[in-house]
Image 1 (cartoon, rainbow, N blue to C red):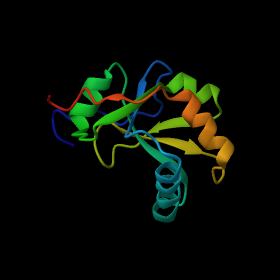
Image 2 (spheres, rainbow, N blue to C red):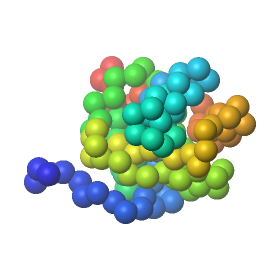
Image 3 (cartoon, rainbow, N blue to C red):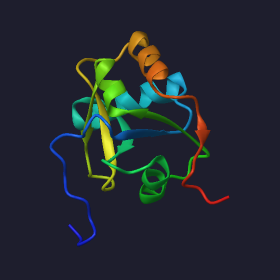
Image 4 (tube, rainbow, N blue to C red):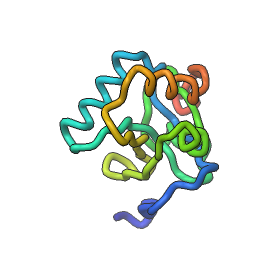
Length: 126
């Protein structure tokens, strides 16, 4: 770990912002979750999250280049029945939305409802 790296967290606080790259189209979202299962043996959706960081800070630190992003909070995802776990293997601010079982259309609809509408990625210079 470099001197400026953020420590691994045992649990993200409910107040932490969660950023998902892109607009979360059904096919891409479900494929991403299933691909993670194939690689890691658990159902997870790749997101960005770290305490006290804004959407812009998360997108910038991760080098996110998608034109749009969608934003939620850890609390909202937990209230919908999912956990968000810090997973700094890709970057210090990488996290996973974790599913207990293989996600269904109902899970996708729940996620789609928890995340806000797509917004311009504030981490991309204009």
